[in-house]
Length: 250
Image 1 (cartoon, one colour):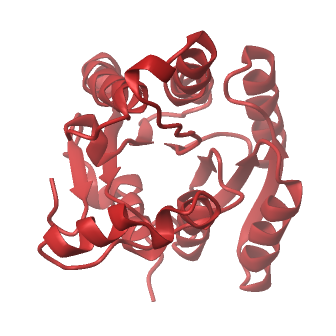
Image 2 (image 1 turned 180 degrees about the vertical axis):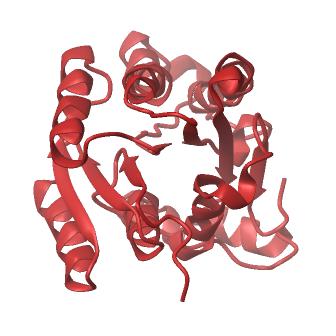
């Protein structure tokens, strides 16, 4: 089987579990050397690395908060030390907290914007410095909520709307350097997060399954191949686009 990413180096933020872990494993399976970034779960990141290396792939786990400039610089300094450069950046690290209007406060706002938006920009800033000629690929993980109407998700939805807007702007800015920038906008995906928050067994999930044309929520393996496509030369003429992976629900 040909490996579309053979010889490339990919950094996946927030890759110790869920969608990020699925992406890291898929990129490695396609031949990339992968940096598995994590914030708190070193054990989770180490497990992802172990699964990749057990199949003959290359991966290292590097801890860093994407919301902290010094830690982001350290993440990419260690990436350079391990693999020499960056060809692919997947800005997957993110959090979601829901709250009605009267529950929103400064902490609720900044916590989500600092990770979901500022973190994406800081990581992109450092990754671009390590991207060799002729460029690379940046994939931002957004969400269907960026264009949806979800009660209680005003701040989270705003962060993902910002991700989509920043992606379009960065695609125009980085195009002359042959760096492509796109988003993947997943719908509800079954992860450790949906289980721990109770969403997995919620009426919200049942409502989505009842209205989605394909009748189910997603899994990480529904997302990862699309990321691999955007990371590869197969998408060499694609930039500034948003790919909605949501079983047809918008």
